[in-house]
Image (cartoon, rainbow, N blue to C red; front, top):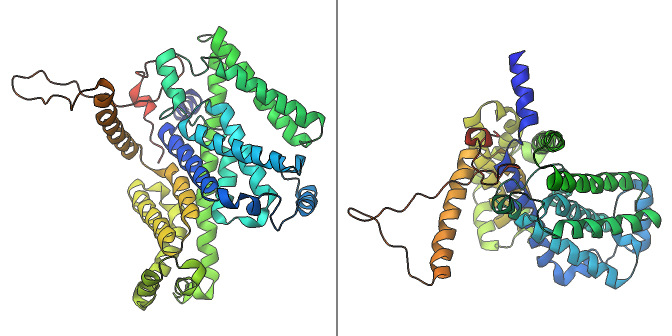
Length: 413
């Protein structure tokens, strides 16, 4: 009974995996941003009026599958440019962690609108981004490494400033237009209305009752949603690898160890023909990589019960995706999968990487801001420099971010 009580207190009392959720947020926002910028010259052919998937075909498909896209509201080229620009801006803001509760919804709208407009333009990486854009709305993914966390440290509240109410008003006008003119279905209207109401309620409680029971209740509900969202993300990644691995087992080319050989001979998947030819010339290497891919994907969900084995296979999968990006010319697919894999990264590793990044930032920016050279050295007889504090999650009600460090650094592994 005590164990159940402690588990319930942990699930409701804190947002688990704050660093992992931040990395997932940064990874998917950055991947989608890079994709939109890379395909900017071809945006009309991919998702716009010049694409092979016409507006009439898109309307017929949406009527059947009830998917969501705002691009069908108008066939105007200007409307397409606005939606594309908002998708790019939302990706930047989510990457930085600015007003993340609202921006994550805008990011989801941008992803769904573009991808559902031309459903045959994507690959497996686009499907992962599609799903994760929905799941990120549920998470408190800006607790660390974000402008929201910085605002909490400086002002004591992530809702401080006038930008929040302005953004809320703009989203409200957008919601009203979609509801009145039939741009949203009933389900999407209710979902967006619930999010819009929650944003208003959170801002009011955060402003007028920051330390009361109402705020405590909202924190509990937000933690439950966050932890449920993180659980769904981890289950989704395990499902992706498990299904991919078991389907590979059923294929004859994967059984005889030659599945990798054939893509290496296709012009579409050989950005580096010399490197692909060198790898394809070694039958042993092709066989080992083919079998290794199947083994890692099938085994990974079962390794979650052993942290050390899980970390080894996680590193192997990330290396595998990096190899796919280089050898097969699928960088955005690989970035999306690596961002999804990041949910399993150890907290200690993320803290170490965060400390290195913070140290590099201080060395680059502080001397330049002060107009001086490098900081004075330390040594015998000199005044020592204070050690930089390790960044901790900026929690609501803890502006300085110096709360229970052991509680904040919960391992998500």
